[in-house]
Image (cartoon, rainbow, N blue to C red; front, side, top):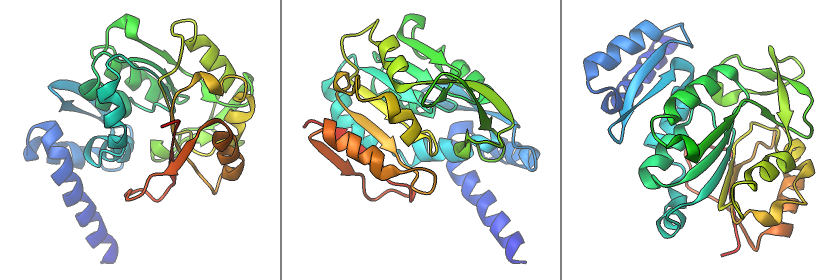
Length: 260
């Protein structure tokens, strides 16, 4: 009985926040009912007048970024930086990109996503928002080297991560290699957003030589999966101001690192 009540509550909750994107309660209900038990069932919504695509297993990400607006702390920066160059590591299906386009339509963005299915939706959600010359995507895992690593893609896609028992193999990409690639197109990185489900410590192994080329970083940490204190130490060494964002609905710590 309790399980049925929880399912009903979750369904009603999703109906309430997803309907504005899908255009009607009826269309949303049809999608949610058809998607039950089918994590890859694809839906179509609209944000800022443009379509975006998601799967049932992506709904947590859609809510966090487009409903709970967890990146609104960046609005003052975006308002004073008309054409920012941004690197999004752990770009998922592009929810941050979708949000970014509304707030900063002249941004240029590099995106990294390891899950091939999520990467395909990332490209689909990006290509009609930003001009081709303003975005580039990489289907790689943020890691300490460029060797192939196992990556887990099962369950809620917000929890996909590098894992020895992962169901696919994908080439790694290092912090240094990614930034050096971006620096071929810009003198500095205005913002780097990182959400890589516990791979933070490994990814930062090659960061020291290029961190001074990045003006600000926003990063979600995963204390159960890596040594977050080691990551914080590197960030504190580079940035004058490293502060944890409070009042989040998600319980994972997020740091906003700047020289302001």
